[in-house]
Length: 470
Ligand SMILES: [Zn+2]
Image (cartoon, rainbow, N blue to C red; front, side, top):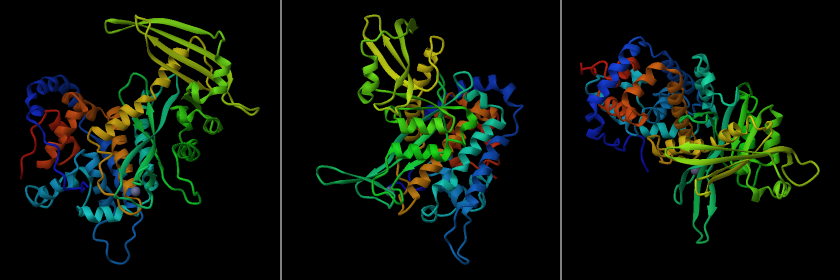
């Protein structure tokens, strides 16, 4: 188990800074533009939202035993994810005792008063309901909207693509809590695991995703059966469908979503769907398509030095399943052949949106953007610094889900800043990549005290020297 403050930060190799000359060149390019963005109000406002929300979290303590505020406890739990450093708090305690003379980046960057112990953070967050933090996903989205960056999220002439997908973020055969799901192996061994349905705004051709409110797959009161992705997704739609209707959403999902109950839930909130639809799991629909000439469109596409043939086929008004009450949906398929006529990709989708020769290519591209939630969300959260699968602590009740939620919120705020905050964006571009940006941010904040985000981001962009210890 990795404790919140005990794991060593991943080492920052010399190569991160050996490219200083290259960074400096880039920073010169950005200097003219960047110097006008002194304020990083966007980030400060969102971090203040995190502090305010944490201040309102349920506090199980009674009487005078409130040495640390819930605001400090929540922000402390959030900070290792936001700063991309499992040992962020441990470094800040050292700064506080040393060069900071009682202050650390926890105070200056996150607005905390004091740093609670790791055990206290875990104990207190274990009884917090993850849903009491969900407002922060809306705050991140609202900040993007206020900054005028909402149009950058849209696809297909004004729709917003929201991908739904489940992922497991914890598994153990030893540790468990009351909210673990279980599976039994033939050997008798029991796995305890946690899974979440994540919802993210995606866009074809863009390498970002913006996380929205999640829904955890966990035992539900009043149900004997184990919870599952499909049920959690319908719960998500019931809870959030209307909330996100102003985005004019088209929901994307894999084959388990292309079932009548899920499609009906989506239509009921005035939204649309574009789900993967495999022939094997939609036999009735497939029977309608066998041996029938359907409209199609083909085009040669050059990718690198190679040519591929893209073929789209579609058909309108097919029953999603057997039976008189079957929902009618529109079907489309994309097939990609290489120059040897070998199929390199094939997928089919169902949607309630009209399909024709003018939009079938865009719809297929939108449907394919679903994989982004796996690549850009889960892969980033698991392997690129967010440590989603690492066990920072499991707790007895909600700790596992609360930490996963704080992790997703950190990811959402990073993405919101990347979309809408010019200062943050410029600092990443100077660093060359998000990974390198966070490596540098982690290294600098581990040893130096920054008076503000403005000062930290400008140092990251090599525009000002790091502050000297006072
Ligand atoms: Zn558990």
